[in-house]
Image (cartoon, rainbow, N blue to C red):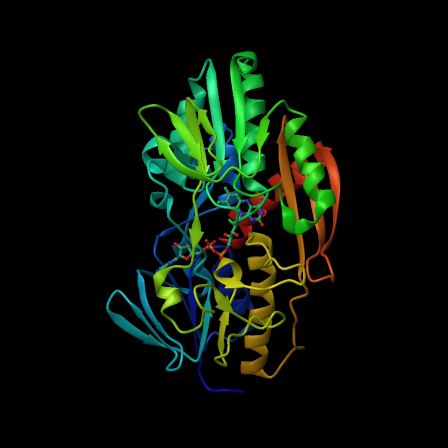
Length: 385
Ligand SMILES: Cc1cc2nc3c(=O)[nH]c(=O)nc-3n(C[C@H](O)[C@H](O)[C@H](O)COP(=O)(O)OP(=O)(O)OC[C@H]3O[C@@H](n4cnc5c(N)ncnc54)[C@H](O)[C@@H]3O)c2cc1C
C-alpha cells in the first residue's frame, strides 16, 4: 500500500461531493481528501425547478459543504486560480496545493452577458438568485406572456428547460390564471433532448405541446430589448414577452481552458471508461469533460453522469492506493426524471454509449416518477451532503 496520499477534489458540486464521500469510505483515515469549492453552500440544482413555482424555498435545497468535515473530508472554500497538471499542483486563493491525485469536477461556466439585454431583460433559471426572482414574478402574474428560452443549443440537463416550461404552465393552472397567460418556449436547438434519439425527442415535444405551450425550436436569440420586452432571433423573428426565464450559454471556465487538459476551444478530454486525462492520476468528471458519442454529439452534461463517473473514479483511485477492489469502468448508463407538472413526471433511462445511437426508453408521466424525483432529492440533501 502507498504511503500517505493526498487527493484534491476540485469542485463541490454533484461530482465532487460523490467522489469525496466515496473515497473517504474506501480509504484509511491516514490519506487526505481535500475538497475545494468557490461557495460554502451546495445547491441541489434539479430542485431549482420546483423553486421556480414556489414548491421549494432556497434553504430547503441548500446544504453547507462543511457538513462533509464530520465525515473526514477537508473542505476549503476558495477560488481555484490555476491547475498545473504536469506538476499536480493547484493554486487556490494564492496558495499552492500539491497532490498525488486530482479529480477535476468544476462543472460548466455560464455567460448570460454574451447575449445583449438577456440578463437585464430576464431571469437566469439556472441560478438560485435568478430562480428566486422568476418565482417572485410568477407568483403575482395575472395575465400576459411568459417566455422560456434556451440561449444556446447545448446546456446542462437537456430536460430542464422543458420541465421548467411545463411546471410554469401547471403553476398558472393551479393559480387559475392559465387562460390569461400564454406560455411560449423558444429554443436554440431543433428539438428536445436530441441526444436521446428521435423517439424521446418527439415524446417530450408532445408532452410540452400537449399542455398548450407554444413551442418554437431553432430560435437562436441574438438580442433582448428589456425596455420593449422583446426577444429577437437570428432567423429574423421577434417575440414580445412580459416575463422571461432563460438558460444561459454554457462554456468551459478559464481556469480549465488554461490547464492544458482541453481539446482546442473545448472541454477536458478523458478516457470514456476511466475518466482519466492524458496526465496519469488526474481525472475529470461531470460537466467539465466532453465525451464524444458515435452520433456526433457529446454525452449530455447531467448530474446523473457526474455521479456515476465519480463513483468509477473513486473506486479506481482507492484501488491504486490500497491495491484492493476491482477496476471500475463508466458504461454510459444514464437516467432522468422529467417533471411535467401537477405532481407527475416522465422517466427516461438508457445506455448512451450504445452504437450507432443511444438506446433510451421513456416512460409516460405518472405520479410514481414524480415521487422518484422527490426521493432522489431527499437522498441528496440528507445522504450525500
Ligand atoms: C435547473 C437545473 C436542473 C437540473 N436537473 C437535473 C436533473 O434532473 N438530472 C440531472 O442528472 N442533472 C440535472 N441538472 C444538471 C446537474 O445539476 C449538473 O449536470 C451537475 O451538477 C454537474 O455536476 P458537476 O460536479 O460536474 O458540476 P457542478 O455540480 O456544477 O459543480 C461544480 C462546482 O465547482 C465549483 N467551481 C467552479 N469553478 C470553480 C473555481 N474556479 N474555484 C472554485 N470552485 C469552482 C462551482 O462553484 C460548483 O460548486 C440540472 C441543472 C440545472 C441547472
